[in-house]
Length: 64
Image (cartoon, rainbow, N blue to C red; front, side, top):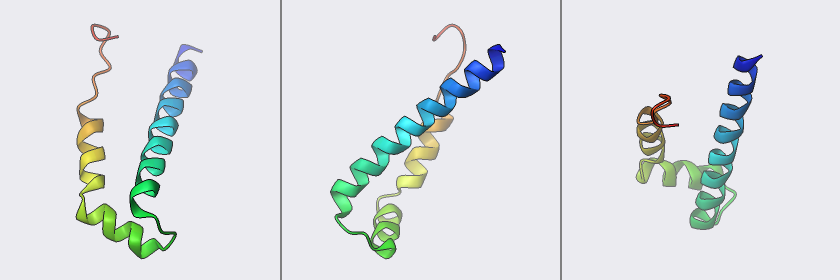
């Protein structure tokens, strides 16, 4: 049961983070064209930044 709670909490954190990222990108890109989004994301290395941030997360009990 505990594992399901952790998975749900992790999913909710992920969803909120991605919603925030999407909203921030939408403010900057100001276009619904997929090319505009792709170009902006590549130019500003958004995926690299997100991946780096995720890899730096620490889930140890000492931090929590």
